[in-house]
Image: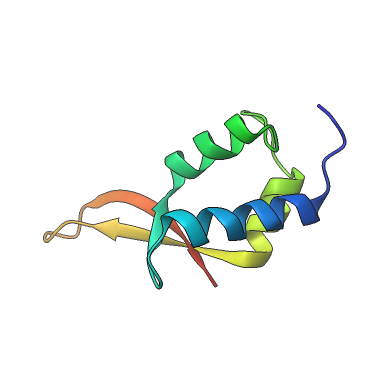
Length: 79
């Protein structure tokens, strides 16, 4: 994997949220990871990567549940 800077990942995250996420909304985690992989800033199966560090700095994870409290999916939200 090439040498990727956390700053590049932070800029990518901000651009994704600006373009695709309504203010106050979130983005489905798997959709985000697909976009990050296609950008070349993240490689599937890696942990502790610059993208993970940038996500930890800029976002929170929110679980979505149905009316009965069953887990449906998770979203990243800008912190």
